Image (cartoon, rainbow, N blue to C red; front, side):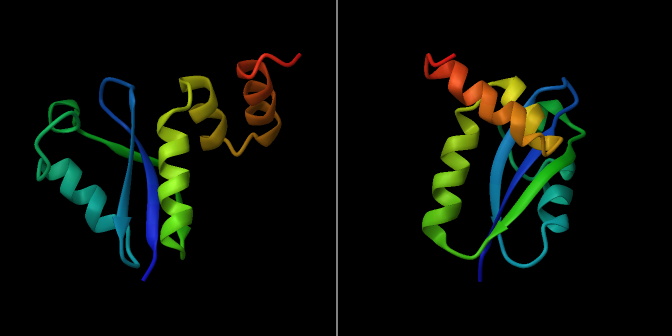
Length: 98
């Protein structure tokens, strides 16, 4: 069984990146909206799923989730749009290359 990495847009227009095991992501989003998880998302409902990707390998989803959580807002928005050129450009800029 694999894992979904997902990104939610919260009511305050901020993003949340999380993971869910299993074959169906919808129940996890429903749990967030029902307030099943106390914490940062609880007070920023409703949430909307804006991006997700399924990973078969544990090592891959852990690395992807950590990486995306560290991204800037601009880079997350580019991921939502599947704008790989912008993601690449922002990655180069952050590293100091022109």
